[in-house]
Length: 508
Image (cartoon, rainbow, N blue to C red):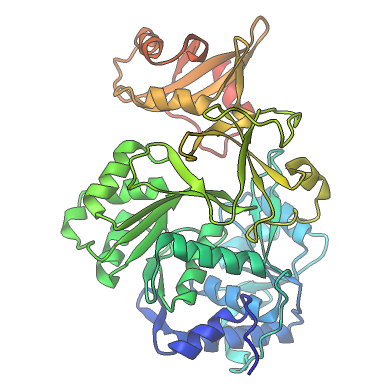
C-alpha cells in the first residue's frame, strides 16, 4: 500500500479513516460528524468540477466564518484549486482590486454582497454562487443537492499553491501571498506542537477565515479529529462565554481585544470555563494587566503569544506564563532571525547587524518550510522585501541576552528626533501606563526646523488631565529625545484603517 500524499486535499480523508463518527463541526444546533462533513465536501467539489473548476484555478470566498466557508475550503483542496478568502469588511475598491488581481473562476458570497458586486468593474466575469437562495448564478444549496457523494481527490504536489491570503500593502494595495500545501501542512503541525494540542480538542472559530490563524485553527482540528465551533454572526462576549461553557471548549486563539471583552463581561462568573486549558493570542500587544487577568481568571495550562506574518507564519512564540512582559519569545522551530540597522529606504543589508540588546529591524530567513516564495503577480514586491534570502519584516525590535525577541514598533513609523531613532510604540506604552490616559497614539510630525517632532494624541480617561501633567509625566519616564513636544487631546483616536496621512490632519 502506497503512502498517502500529505497535502491539504487528503487531511479530511485521513481524519475520516480514523474517526468518522466524531463531531467535526458545530454551528448553532447543527452538528456535523466527520463522515457528514466529508459527504457534503465531496458533493460540493463534484458540482464545482461540473462547473468547470479545475486544478490551479482560483476560488474566491467573501463570507464570514460559517459552515459554507469550511465546506468550500476543503472542496477547493480536493479539487486541487486555490482557495482565496477575502476580508468580509473590505471596501468596494479593495474587493475590485482583488478580483481583477486573482481573476477567480468562481466567487462565493452572500446575498448582501451582490448590491456592490454589481458596481464592480471586472476584467472577466466569474461564476457567482450565492449562499442564500436569492442572487447569483446558482445557489450554494443547489451545488450540494446536485453533487455526487463520491469524489476522487486531485493529486497536488507539495509545492503547489493551496491558497492565497491577502495582507495589507505599505502602498495601500493589498498583497496576495500564495501559501503552498507544504507551507500549510508544516505550519499546522508546528502550531499543534507549540500549543500542546492533543487529539479531540474543541475550539471556537473566532479568527476570520481570511486570516492565517483562522485557517490554522480549522486545519488543526481536522488533523486532531477535534471539533471546530462556529460562533453566531456578529457574536459578542456573552456568545463566547455560552459556547465555551456549553460545548466544553478546550483551546482558543483570539486577539487581545477579544480576551479583554471576554474577561470584562459582567456575567463571566455565571459560566463554567474550567474546560479551557490552552489559550493563545497574536496580532497585537497584550497589556500586562490583561495577561494577569487571563492567568487569574482562566487558569490556563498553556498560554502562548504568537509573533508572525502571512508570509512567514510563525516568527517567534513566547509562553506568557513566563515572566517576560513585552516579549514575543524565541524564534519558531524552523526560523532564523536577525536584527539589523533600520532604514526606511532599504539601505541596510542582512549583514548590518546591531549589537545585542540594540533596537533594529527584524529580518527572517526564508529557508523555512513555512515561508512563502513570492507575492502573487508582483515580483518587484518580492525584490523589495527580500535580500539574500532574508525577509525584511518592517518590524522594529531587539534580542536580549537570553535570545528572547521584543517588538518595539514599525520601520515606517520610525521618527528621527534630535538625530536619534525613536519608535512610537515605546512612547505609547509609557503614556498608557498613566492612569489618566485611556488611549494614545504617537506620530512624527514634519517640522521645517527640526525635520520631525514627536506628537502625542491622547484620549483621557480623566477629563482633568492637562498637557502640563502629561509633559511632566513624560519627563520622568522618557529620555529627552523621546519625549513628545506636542500633545493633542482627542475624544477618540481613529481606527487602524485610517492612514498615517489622515492622522496627520488631526494636528492641522
